[in-house]
Every structure is written in structure tokens, then in C-alpha cells.
Length: 159
Image 1 (cartoon, helix red, strand yellow):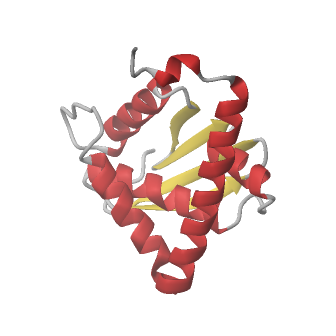
Image 2 (cartoon, one colour; image 1 turned 135 degrees about the vertical axis):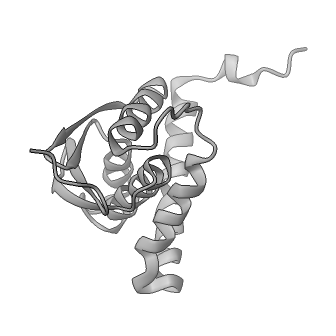
Image 3 (cartoon, helix red, strand yellow; image 1 turned 45 degrees about the horizontal axis):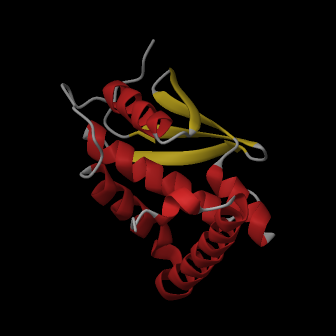
């Protein structure tokens, strides 16, 4: 007998797992907000910085542009429908069918709420670590598609 149960899972099994992960993420966010309060964005950034050290990236140069290219590449490998570009000195990320939005819909949470903000700060932490420049997210649009920007400290504006 093989120990590969993932080969025998049904679509219903995946739906149940998604519901469970959504519940756990919801409880995790509520707990963080309750205990950490106004420092919640800092916690998300720190988690993102820690995650950046575990990403399969090769940074030839630590710039926001190179970091964005690597982040988008890695997330696309994970099947995330993401695009990233620079508008002036800010990175703009667009997520189509955002997985966090899926969690929000599953848990009947408001799109653009605390869970979305934490995800944006988490991505900002990853980008800050990869680029060597602190990054601050700003939500531009929420819904089926999510768009947010990252402003980098210490980076000269592009003409």
C-alpha cells in the first residue's frame, strides 16, 4: 500500500480542506488583531521578511524592480494569477482571482478588510527583504481582482 493519499482525494475533499484553511486563517487574523492591535501591520511585514528568506529566488541585484520580477515569477509557479509593474517609483501588483479574496468570500468577510490588509503588508515584507528597501502597501482596488501598490523608502522616483 502506498502512503500517497493525495492521489485518491476527490474534489469534495479539496473543498473541505479549503473551508478548513479559510476558518483557520480567519481565526488566526482575529487572534493577531486582538493580541497585537495597532502593531498588526508590523507583524505581517516581519512574517513577509521571514518568508522571503525561504523563497526560491536568486537576486543578482537588490532593487525593487528585480525583487518584483522574482516575486511575480515565484507566485506564478504557485499558480497565482499575478502581474506586477512599476508606475513611477511604485510597484503595482494585480491579483486576478485573489486567494485571500476567496477566503473572504468563503468566510463571509468583507473584501478589503483586515485580512486583505495583512496580506498586502505580508507581500510588502517579502518585497522589502528582497529589495533591501522598506515598502508600504496601499490598496487600490478590491473585488474579484485586487490591485495594490508598494511605495519604497529610499528609492529615487523614476522620471
